Amino acid sequence: SWMHQVRIYSRSNCHLCDVALETLMELQKEFEFEIDKQLIDGNPELEDKYGESVPVILINGAPHDFFRVDPTRFRNVMSKL
Image (cartoon, rainbow, N blue to C red; front, top):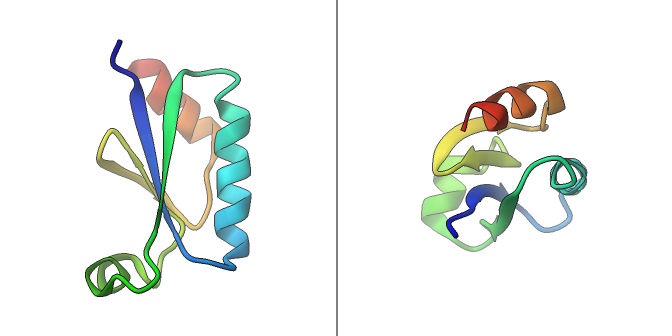
């Protein structure tokens, strides 16, 4: 069955990225979705696009949030999918 995908663009040694990932993993207890973590390190295109904003979170390819995951906002979106 098709599962919702949450992509997180992050960098190595990025504390905010680690926190966002932990929050997403907690939210997996409530909603079914895959976490697709993408490091932008060394990818000029992605660094140009997301470098100043990581972590950047996309839900099913649609931009959702950056810097942090707001659990309330995330739940609102996921509950409507």
